[in-house]
Amino acid sequence: MQRLKVGVIGAGGIAQIEHIPNLMKLKHQFEILGVCDPSAKARAFVGEEFGLVAFKSIEDVLALPLDAVVIASPDPLHHEQILAALGRGFHVFCEKPLCYAPGDIDDLIAARDRVGKVLQVGYMKRFDPSYEAALGRMPGTAKTLRYVSVEVNDPDAWPFIKHHAWRQGDDVAPDLIASVKAKQQEQVARAVPAALDAMSYRGFTAAYCSSLVHDVNAVHGLLDGLGVPDGEIAGAQIFADGQGGQGAVRLLGGRALWNMVHLKVPALADYSEKITFYFGEGILELEFPSPWLNHQPTRLTVKTSNGYTFAREDVRTGYEEAFIEELKGFWSAIVEGKAVRNTAEQARRDMALLSGLAQFHAGARS
Ligand SMILES: NC(=O)c1ccc[n+]([C@@H]2O[C@H](COP(=O)([O-])OP(=O)(O)OC[C@H]3O[C@@H](n4cnc5c(N)ncnc54)[C@H](O)[C@@H]3O)[C@@H](O)[C@H]2O)c1
Image (cartoon, rainbow, N blue to C red):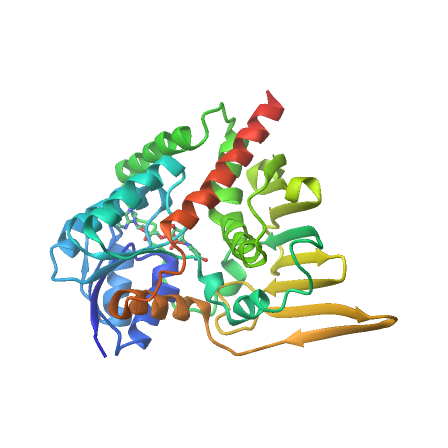
């Protein structure tokens, strides 16, 4: 088995809890040569916990003889770091959101195509065994689709990471934090060319781009499976101080509607993320657990009727962890030339919808 030499860029929560231990579990496929993070606390943790070399700056990691990088840094840094890694000829796995602005993703697509390397986005839900099973078990067709619902309540990670070993890198220099904020402002201005008040800005960057982006991508994949083309935005609201985001999309010329809501419920130690497809003849429901609860299956339920006889089928096809499967997929794309699942083009489509929702919301408020 070919062992890919990787560097990890950003050693915060997701890298410490998921990507680094998962890459190490896949030890026949990956070897981590180095990690970088500006936080001394995060670097110390990575050294003590995993025995890895950790550098302060990205240049030190990119100078290593790597095949690929895994980027798990703050969102506004993805664009420049992907370009730097592709520029060195490395394959790139990058966390979502790939970039805020669809136009910024075009730069990445062009750079990827210039060097002919893999660029995969961290939409792990597409590797969830229940999601894969859902693609083949829709109890209806594009002709009978009536409604798609996304409903998420999420307190953020705190209840679900207490049992993991990790260390917050809260010692990053203030000027570096300020520069990331400034980059975010520039990128958001490119993504949403409309005046966003503070609440709407938070809603776009957090509720939409950090959270709902997963569901938008998952629903896009399910709609593709049905052959339902992209629809038109019919409504959008950012609420709950920017911790709530809603969007509505008219599908199939108005024959069907897709409504999505993400709400942070900060003090509730519970998580629910439901995607439901309603057809004339049946319903399919996916209920995801908090992503931090590894190997906990996503509930897939298919409801159908045969005349008066109603049937509810609970489908479980395995206990594979999506965060691990996406890394295996990254390896297969690089080593075996398999098609990339979760491309920059898909991310572009997701971000075009989310920036459109923010624009719709801003227009409705002005
Ligand atoms: N797929 C998922 O479900 C999921 C879950 C959580 C986070 N994420 C994504 O992963 C990324 C990281 O999120 P997180 O929760 O780990 O955040 P975090 O704040 O815990 O970690 C980010 C780390 O990046 C470091 N950093 C800052 N500037 C850097 C630079 N110039 N170079 C390298 N590292 C730098 C920070 O010091 C910090 O340690 C984000 O893009 C986020 O959206 C994805």
